Every structure is written in structure tokens, then in C-alpha cells.
Image 1 (cartoon, rainbow, N blue to C red):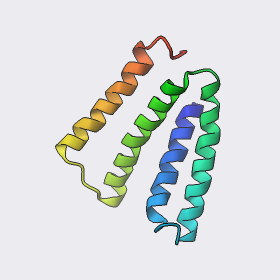
Image 2 (image 1 turned 90 degrees about the vertical axis):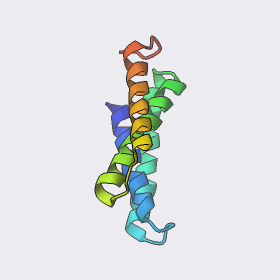
Image 3 (image 1 turned 90 degrees about the horizontal axis):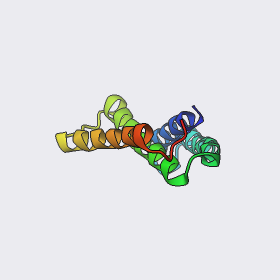
Image 4 (image 1 turned 180 degrees about the horizontal axis):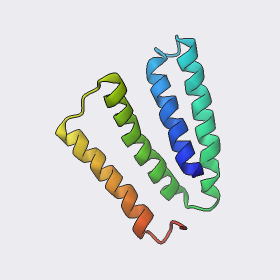
Length: 106
């Protein structure tokens, strides 16, 4: 659950970063900085019990998919077939790690 919260904080921060206009707009800039601070703080908790590579693979993989989805739904950024297939492979990889890997404690 904490890892999921870290992912959501990172997605919110990255979405705000895209709207910050290189940190020239105050509110999106503040949301981005605070969001990343919260994301990294939350990310430190699963690192206590799950190997770093596994945590980072899940965090970055799901973050990529969610950010691409937000950009598509809210900002009209189109995804072509190769992009959609690639995102599907990322999701499949996260599922394989979580379901079949012995390094992830369930």
C-alpha cells in the first residue's frame, strides 16, 4: 500500500512538473517538488523489506504507465499502437515480478 501511495505521489508530481513551465508557474512547481518529496519518503519504506531492484522496477514501471495514461486522458497526448503495446509489456513485467518472483514478500 505504501508503494502504491509512492507511485501515485510520483505520478501527481510528474504531471505537475509538466505544467510548471520549467518552474515558472508557482502552484504546479510547488506540487511537483512536494510530490517528489512525498514519493521518495514513501518509497523508503518498502525498501526496508523488498530488494531495491524490485521496488524500483514496480515503482518506475507503474509510474510510466500511469503518467502515460494521465497524459492521454487529461492532456490529449496520443498513444500509437507501439506505445500501447510497450505499456502493456511494462504492465505484464510488473505482474510477472509480483506473482512469480520469490524475491517479493507477499
